[in-house]
Image (cartoon, rainbow, N blue to C red; front, side, top):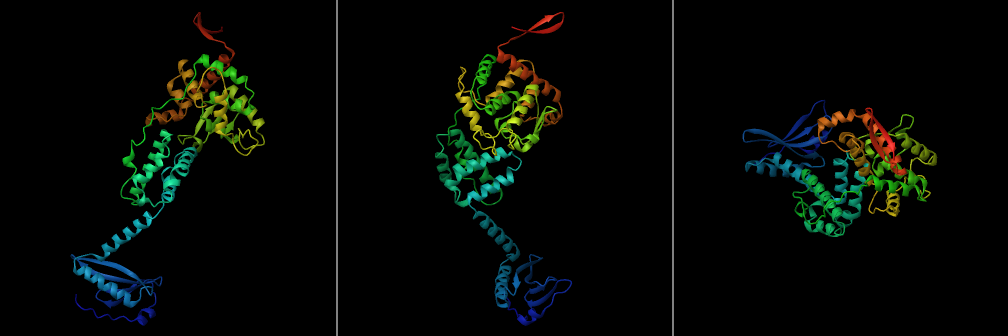
Length: 416
């Protein structure tokens, strides 16, 4: 390299005052001090490489004094002589430094970021379950480990601790895999250590929630009326059948969601599994039961407050689970979720359209064009279906059977 005669003195730089526009003080060999209107004094190196003009910032004066700036300048001049770009090298160094800083984040922190940035559109209930899995099963094992330090063996340790719950174990594995896939997109890690663990857990075939025939349903309803349980528990059970909603959607309802005079219940999207608002057209029987609960729970923000004296919290899911498990009506294994399948099957068997039943269940429609149509339609059919369901349940409970007879072209219902 040719020798450079540097000319700037510290006093010259110190005395340089900012102007309306940036200007430069030349030191030599392409090294300058740029004086910005803000008063910042930045060391820059201007040079030519492969016929192109480039510029790179070394640092700010006086944090980087004259001697240090010139030493750094000599290093960069050598890079240029070797055909290397100091500007591009600095960009690479910055990216590497940022990646290193990002990588030095524990799994606990990054998984929380993943939930916030990728699951924001999911329901509160869904996100709460994911966070519960992370806090209960994952973070105690790998939560404090930095992302790049986590190996497949570490993740397998998490999974091995859940082998008595194979379905949960595989679900947790998928969550960890999704966290690392997101980390790869953010350049925090270069590989996904969880991807090779697919199949590490043998998941038994899925079992659907048991639903009841009309005969079994009659026994269930009559047994329900004979239970000496808390009134709120019994009413909640009846309303699961009458509304076809999920257990959590019912138990966490508040008065503001209801217009009982218009017989409608609007559940906000953040409480729905699919994240979309859902309207329930209430039957006469459902309206009456909700009016009873409004009276019973007048001192609580919840329509179904806890039955254990804590009126400021909603009834727990486990309350209904235990209640169903105690009922002896001749069928074992019937759960609160099974009420949805029972009601849906009853409506389908009595001629109600599948589209209507799917809307009553608030299932997601895979066909986007059809989904847009169903979002606005079938309100009256849904109202009719739920009123039919309520009336049919009344008949089933009393043991009445409906027989359709054709008398001069008219259909007549006769109670057997």
